[in-house]
Length: 80
Image 1: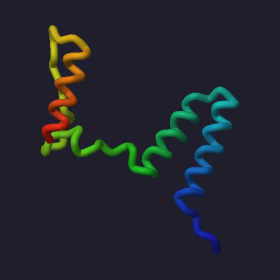
Image 2 (image 1 turned 90 degrees about the vertical axis):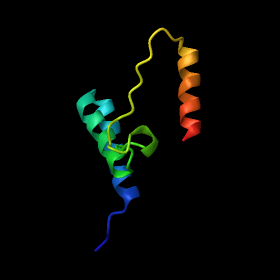
Image 3 (image 1 turned 135 degrees about the horizontal axis):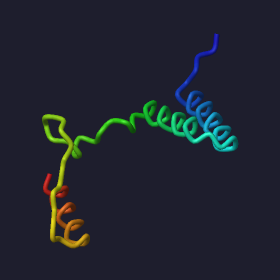
């Protein structure tokens, strides 16, 4: 009896995703992609992206340029 590996499952999901793309079925494509992400753990937040109480980090920045906001974000992330 052969056992499926993670690579086997990912390959099968990629094949299903390609068929969904060819048949223009975006919901099936999205489902295959989401399932792949779950299998490899990309559906979990990165620890630096949440507070200790598991709430997402929210920035409420008004009156700041995108460059200033990006710099402030980098400074905060580097301080951790």
